[in-house]
Image (cartoon, rainbow, N blue to C red):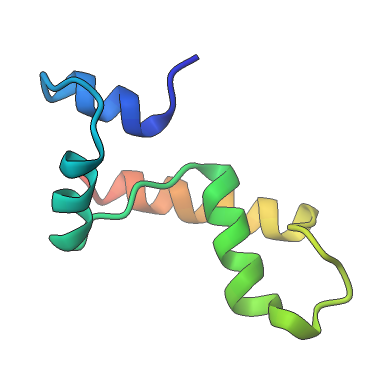
Length: 75
């Protein structure tokens, strides 16, 4: 199964390479899925004082909701 990065680059007609991603990221684009979003939510909102080391079900649920909201506004 290709990564999000590989899928995006192929959809854009590119072979996967790190330069394409650097250009997209420098333009402010962040590629997320539920896993990366839940990790980001955990890192930002739970932080180093969290009582759990990895994203929990609440983090996962918030990530699913955030990804759905982002997708809704991309059209």
